[in-house]
Length: 206
Ligand SMILES: [Zn+2]
Image (cartoon, rainbow, N blue to C red; front, side, top):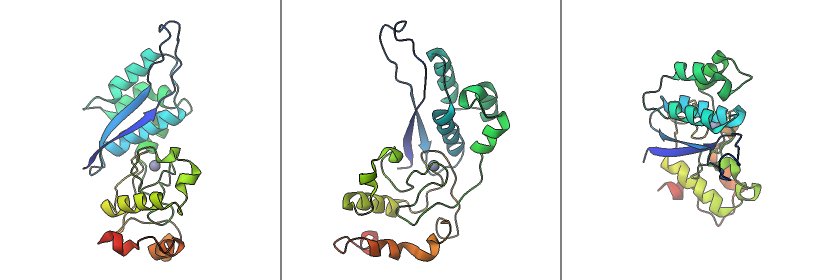
């Protein structure tokens, strides 16, 4: 399955009284095809930046943004020009475009615990909101967590971009590229750190 949904929460000032005491949901969910880099990686980057840096003074401007953003035939440049100040007040049009179209980067850490170099989300994690996990759940010693990551890794060892922030990943001809010493250290080192009761990488890959 290559279509997944990524959801980000957007900060919107709401007038509860005017709204009859109702708090509107201000999440934006984007359906992305993980096998196609464009426009998914670009739209994800803009959504991630908006969730991180953006602020909406009222619901009307949020809905205006959302309607434009979720249009199937969105023109990214026109969209960023129109919504520049909502995406990030501190950033110029070109800052945002550069961020959205950023070059490929190697990931951090060795698999299956690699992380996105931009947003630090786990590359191989089945849940959509990996960065919200508690530290306890993220410990490599947690067997259930380890198995989840390993399963996700074996199902898709070469993801094209981060499903949280859209950062594109750098590839060699055979695998993702890893930053610094990660490649030399390799997967086997990770597995040595695991308890002996856990399956080896080869066993899981069979
Ligand atoms: Zn990311």
